[in-house]
Amino acid sequence: MLGGWIEVQIISELDAGEVLGLLGDPSVPGAWQDGRMIRLYWPSQHWTSDHLAHLRQTLRRLTELGMAEPDIVVHSLPDQDWNRQWAQSVKPLRVGKRIIVSPSWERTEPIGEQIEIVLDPKQAFGTGHHATTSLLLEWLEEDIRGGESVLDVGTGSGLLAMVALRLGACRAVGVDNDPEAITCAREYAAANGFGPELALRCGTLTAGLSSHDVVLANLDRRTLLELIQPLAASTNRTLLVSGLLVDQRDEIVVAFADFGLYPGREREREGWLAMEFTRVESCEGTLR
Image 1: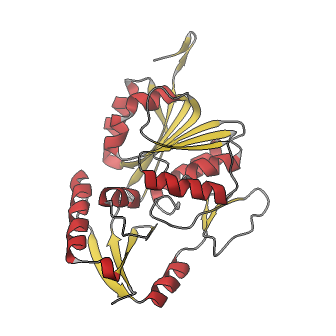
Image 2 (image 1 turned 120 degrees about the vertical axis):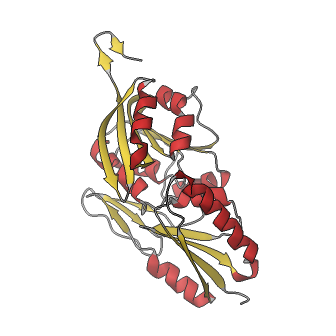
């Protein structure tokens, strides 16, 4: 169907960012997530049985964590239907009491202390619809009081960093090892009017970065464990972690305790767990 689209629906508890990152297919021009539904799109002329096989292989890699292999539904859509469905499906998202994430075609006028981030779904993940992201957004709304420095590790679209600044943080750094994500994040930052207070960097977190009041890490278990040392070194007050399955909690707690970070608040949603880690202070200073 020349000029049409292939829509692939994936129904599972998987994280859309992980799917897109591992899939690594530049022919996917659009994707979004709404709860347990991930939607990916290919131009019809670029879709072959090899793409479906590669997608299934990618999903099997992600389900090694113990989740059931997800259901996949493939549809063909003409251009007009795809464009209409895109606009109808991506609506303004309200998180907590103050945060609104809107697509550019349906802006929302903030009222009172509300804030709005304009973000059109692209290949970089992070529209706020997934539970792992919304849990951190809610904590930011509660915890940012003004003047904080924030580090967002695995920043994706840069949404968490941008929200932190809108809520009153004085500076934010977003780090991601996906150059496409950083390119999209920089476009979003410019569209929302951010300047030098927001730095977006492509690369891997290292222990040499300066420390921050609030560190955000919306990452899978394996990546969190790989980054424990630089995450701990970058945290001088609070580390907020998301992207974990509930049964991975104890392993993460033990691992972070070795670096002087201990669990506080926890929240669970749709099988995903978000955790707060803080440093324990002694009369002689921070315990390490």
